[in-house]
Length: 120
Length: 294
Image (cartoon, rainbow over all chains, first blue to last red; front, side):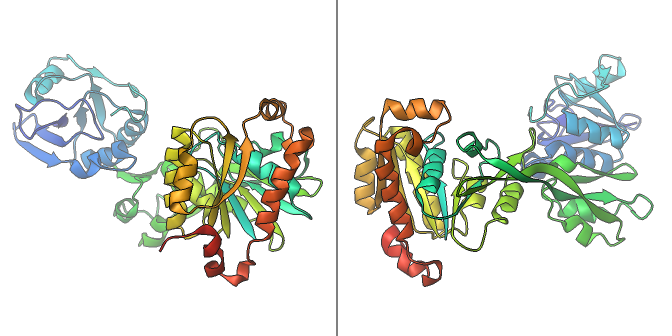
């Protein structure tokens, strides 16, 4: 299972970035093999508008099936849904801890955006 | 002759100047209310409606059968209005600026365009004044395309007055660009001065001749006048701070109708506008009045 966690750094020990579209980095974790990869999102973070859509496109392009972040706005959620990506919000701590929260069922699967547009 | 009435600061009296100037000019005048987010000229003119047209911007529609998700459209779009997500392309029409680029770059010709309504342009007439107003639908964010639609309806002959939106952002520029003269309305307060300076900088960049109207003269301080003197800006008119003006305004009355002794002030402004060099005399002639710096 490929999972993307929004982060302010590049490793499993980096803190989760609560923002999705304007997160600085996406950490891609393969929960079966334990492999990780970090993807720079500084271009997306600087987007004039639609940062969440651009981020969803990036995450979709990585082949991720799940996204862990802090919050997700309406357009980003619509884009992630279109891409068939499950969204888990409310994550905190490090990337590794967020993955742990997902595995232990500590994160709720989102059925809609949890913040308004332009939250981040 | 196109004259735009603009200001850096909102609430300085653009509409008051535009409406009363329109009524003070001889002959027929066209008045374009380009403050499409809050058009209010109609409140002061008992105008008879003559027409209404819905206007929109072209937004993409993707034919899923032709699309191969190559992503060219998404890479081109600076506004993230179109994205390749999973096995399809999703359009976010509310983010689209209507440039048409996605349809042009699509190698599969999978993108066509449909009009997305963003507002209306309404025509009405009151005596010698032909009012054209743009009204943006609530919730819409794209202002300049609607302003351009209003501007596109300016008549070729006679005086066209433009009531511009406040500020110095793209909507103000869309309303002011291409006009022959700009009347910058301000008030003698610190905010009025600060925003006048921004507006002067903007209009100079656009290389349009301009003059200044000081509204509510008597309040605040002398710094607007000092600034105008230092910069060599012509003060076309000073409208006194007068409670009767506020009362007339609050009742939706024009000043030239409600307060007879205000009429000569606007007659002076009208004469100044009429004395402007003819359009085809070129910008150079106008510069002497406007003091456009190189």
